Amino acid sequence: MKYKVAVVGGAGHIGLPLSCYIQNAGIDSIIIDTNKENIDKINSSTPPFLEHDLETKLKTALSNGLTAVTEIDKIKDCELVFVTLGTSSNQEITDNFHQLIETVILNMKEGSTLILRSTVTIQTINKITKMMNFDSKKINLFYCPERIAEGKAFLELEKIPQIVGSKDSELSEIIKDFFERLKIRTISVNYEEAVFIKLFSNTYRYAQFSTINYFDNIASSNSLDFKKLLSIASDTYPRLEKVPDSGLVGGPCLIKDSQTFLNSYGDPKGLISNYFNINMDYITNTIDKCNNYFDHKKIVQLGLTFKPESDDLRDSQAIVLNNYLVNEGFEVKTFDPFINNEEELESVLSFSENIVIATRHKIFDSYDLESKKVVVVGDK
Image (tube, rainbow, N blue to C red; front, side, top):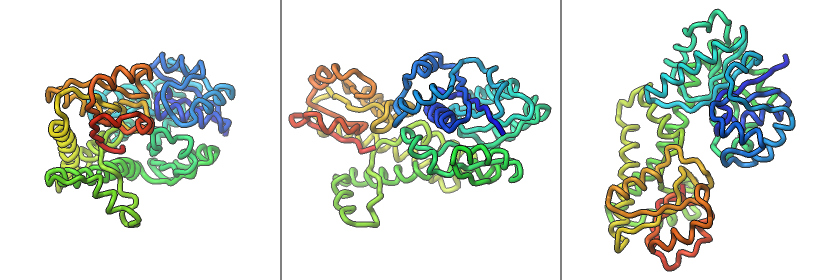
């Protein structure tokens, strides 16, 4: 079967690498996105955000025929339509997502396939199957959740099997052929199982990072340097070699998916709810360290993105920390090498000898901070 693929939301962190990957596998693809600035950048071979090897892959994809447009009606010519927009447990965002899906279905041709890649609940999937035109157009619906680490799409797309959630296993054969052409192994499950797998995976990761912050909080309350103790405890000790460092826990997936898991399945022991509290306590303890260690209220904060070597500010807890510091009465100048121009660095660093490293970009190791008083929030 010959495919043409549309990726709605294809100018974003999930959709753009996927679009390039599909096009470079020899399957004609079109990006559809309302973000005209990003669309213009894509069409001029300029990546709109950081992603490993994206510039090369994008140039190749464009030369192979990838196109990027803002018009939703272009999906009428496509057999497969991916939706890769970010979602949330926020009701307004959920309602907007439902409206978008209605528009997508309205423009899809009869017998085509809709593939959801965003975080969704089983309630959303059930609502989609009851939408106007869904049955009359004989739309095939699959939930194929995104499980790729941001920044590593081209390293992980071939390696990580694709979960394919469908109404029944026979229907999933439609999409298996497509992923086989991409050299991506598939695992077929039903809708409910696919939803749980996606939400559990990110909630568990959030739990891992939150748990280490919990021990850091306890150490802080007992005047102990947890980072020092963790380094000693894990030195040539295999049972602790993969324990993450404590630090700010954010980004576009972990908090959102944990909240969605809680809303969808409950939290009978209050465990997930406590993760949110633990991470707020961690921010509070960081502010206490600043109050106790610094001699005055002027601070330079290095790092604003949600994780190192990224330019993504979505749900960044470094920004939350910044807001709390300001509310606490600190005067804060910020610098992030992935957001600011490098020529701003000298001026920012001269503002204060008090430094908070909130997001630990590798380049910070080359900065001369010998004469500074430094609080390192974490390695995440």
